[in-house]
Length: 400
Image 1: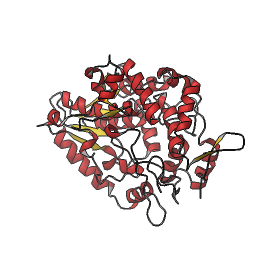
Image 2: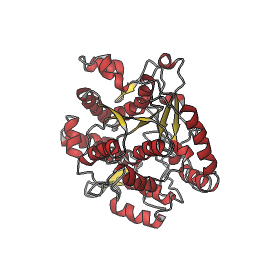
Image 3: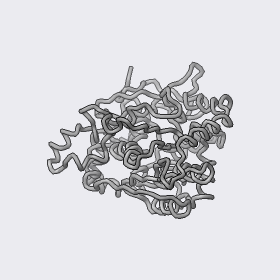
C-alpha cells in the first residue's frame, strides 16, 4: 500500500547507512505538482540501499586511474587554446563548485567559465565564499539573479502546493548552466557528483537523461501550477518573467553538441576531501555555527532557504538533514553507523530557527499560516500526535 506521495508505507532502513526507502528519487521538476507520485530509494535483498551499493562499486570495482585517463581524453577533445572558454562550471562558491572549477583550470589546463544562478536568500557566509571562489580561486563569472518579485511568488506557491519552496529555484539552476553554454557556444558543461552517488535509478553514470534539460511539453509546472494557471492568477506576470525557469526546447539545441557530464564519474567523489581541497585552494570557509538539524558546518550553507528545505523534507519523508549527512559519511567511512545513530538522536529533525522568519517573510507568509501548511503535509504513515498534542514520528526511524 502506497503513502500520500506514492512511497511505500512499510519503512525500510539501510543495513549499512541510515537512509530509508522514503527518500524519493529526483523528479523531473517540469511535471512536479500536488498529485505527483514519487519512487523511493531501492534496496537489494540483503537490505542494502542502492547508494551504499554504488559506494561499494566505487571502492572495489571502479578503476579510477582508467577513469582519469577517460577524463583526460574528454578534456583534450574540448580544450581551446585561442583565448576562449572551453567548459562551463555552475555553482555559487560552495565546496563542490570550488573544487570542480579549480582542478579543471589548474590541474587539467582547461579554461572554465563559472556561472551562478543566485541563491534565493544568500547567507553572509555564502556571499563571502562566492567572492573567495572568484577572487582567491581565480575565475571569470557570470552571476544571474532572477526577478525577485516573481521568485517570491513562485516560492510561495511551491510552499503552499508542494511544501517545496525551492522547487522553482532548483528547476532554474538546473537549466542555467546549459543555457549559458548555448549562449557562449560552449559544448562541455561540468557538474559535480553523479546521481548514482545518492542511489538514483538512472542508467546513465556520466551524464543526464535528456529530459533533465530539454522539455518540449506544453504543460510545465512551476510551484505546482501550470504556466497558464500562474499567468491567470497573477495577470501582471509575462512569459519573459518566467524565462529563467524554463527548460531548453529541442529547437534551441538543434545543431548543437551540448555535452553535460559529471566530474564525479571520472574523479572519485568524497565530500570531506573536496572540502579540504576547496579551503586550501579557493578560500572556502565553513559557517561559524553548526547548521540547524545536523552536526556539520560546510554543506548547503549559501542559501537561507536550505534550512527550510531540509526541514520540509523531514516533514514529508521523515528524512532530515542529519540523516543525509550521517549516511553519506558512513558510506565514506568517516563515521561508524553507531556514531551516525548517536548524531541523529541529537540533531535529526531539529527546528531550523536561524533563518525561518526570513524565508517566511520572503514568501509573504505569516508564521502561523506557514506552520498550518507544514502540518498539512505530514503523511499519516509517518506522523501522529502524542498525548500532549505534539507531532512525533509514528515509527522508529532512527535505526532498526
